[in-house]
Amino acid sequence: MDGWLSEVQQWPAVGILCSSLLFRLIHTLLQTLPRPIRVESEPWRSWKWTNLSVSLVHSLLSGTWAIFCAFQNPVMIREMHSSFSPLSYLLVIVSTGYFIHDAGDIIFSGYARESWEFLLHHVLVISTFVYAVFTRHYVAGAVVALFVEVNSVFLHLRLLLKLAGTAKDSLIYSINKMVNVSTYVSFRLGSQFYLTWFIIYNYTYLDHALFFLVCLMMMNIMILIYFYRLLRADFFSKRTHQNGIHKIHKD
Image 1 (cartoon, rainbow, N blue to C red):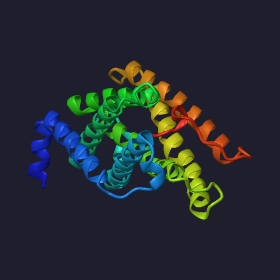
Image 2: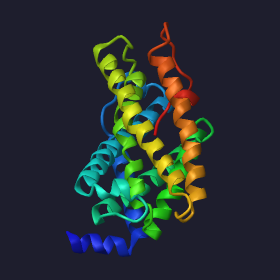
Image 3: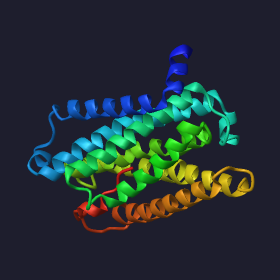
Image 4: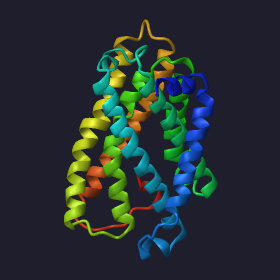
């Protein structure tokens, strides 16, 4: 196992490419599974369903993996610039491949204009993750950033339920929205703000700190806007409404 991980570290670009191809294969396989009639009836819904399903697979994998890496090597939480393990390095490679695949899926699907926010998010993530992979700095920071995928599991479930036409007052939607908002605060906002604090507190000695701080601040603004939309839609809206394409939030 260690020998195989060492090989991956020597050829990170190959690892990223293999990861992208793997998620493309998952995308293809998921297209063969049955889906709600409401989803099948509209091309955009059909594409979105598959896209979100692939994202759900990545979130389940990377969120669990990131938490495991942190428990296995807790020092990474404190030393996010230089510390990492071979398993955490592999995680960042796999996730980089996913985000590249997802960006490509959005672009080549023909829905790039409607999904520009996601593309901007992916560009920010890919640029920071690629830096971490090839310099082996901030690998632990990328792992902490992937804590947000714990929340993404419930965000993706929420959107899949909405695409399927599940009523907002249904039991499964009600349970998911409560777990979703709690994990949004703890895992998404918590990890993002901790990363921002780390960069600001250690700014004077971190290399390329300005680049990472700018990326983090842009993502912080985005997740706060998304949080406002989420609260407004699930907790403060008194009537059922169907969001436009541009309001559907996916990480």
